[in-house]
Length: 308
Ligand code: FES
Image (cartoon, rainbow, N blue to C red; front, side):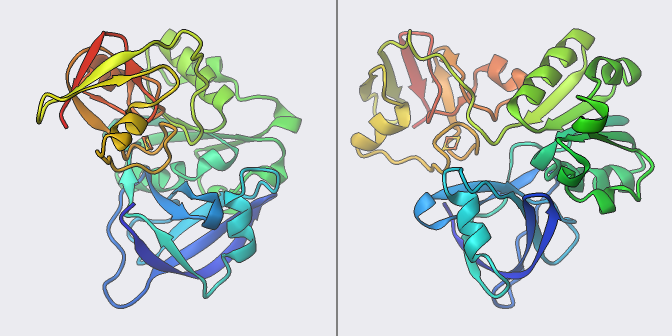
């Protein structure tokens, strides 16, 4: 990843198991601009790299990220929990946005747990643009609702602790806001339910996932990738990704997550039909077949010609 060193200037508890970090530039150059929906990659020591949404105000001179501390996870959040104290330096990437807030007359934001983070700056942007919006925010309990104190200043926020009010009433929400553009981030079952309900209601739904999709790989077969630049042909066997095979052939793509969630390896497709397995491209982008995420996606056709 393109690296930038930032300084942790502040740290706060935001909910049960969630803490936020304020990050400032090191030196006088300031931090790069970003837009609502953007995330950064953060180096987390031996655990590798993790993606975190920028959840502060894009107009501010510092960045804010929030982390769900999972002591039994893969080690990334625990590394930050133990080491990211005020005064610590972190290696991060430039902001990347796979979840742009497109213009709409009305927005419905649906968030679950730590999935509130990319939504927070969207609320600020929608409010500043004078758009109609409503946020439905669910979490296990009231104590798990992050940034609840900030959110309570808006009258358009519905906080839904599951132990008191059950799951978000998605059918009701879509029924009440037909025609609104829906942005959703949260755990996989919520994302899948919102996509299903959105398809039924004919609403435009945009989602962001930070975990890989669960894919059945049992029927995977070999296909061929052809490079546009020199016509070289590489067989991609079942069990290996395009990125892996390209690297073995000395062709390095920019990668970060390697599980189809960050968008950094997006590559243009010139010919062939893609079997999309990422969590980044929209339904329209998949349909167009113009790009793919070769760290996870494969081919439906015998051959894929990539713009490499
Ligand atoms: S490396 Fe993150 S989507 Fe491919």
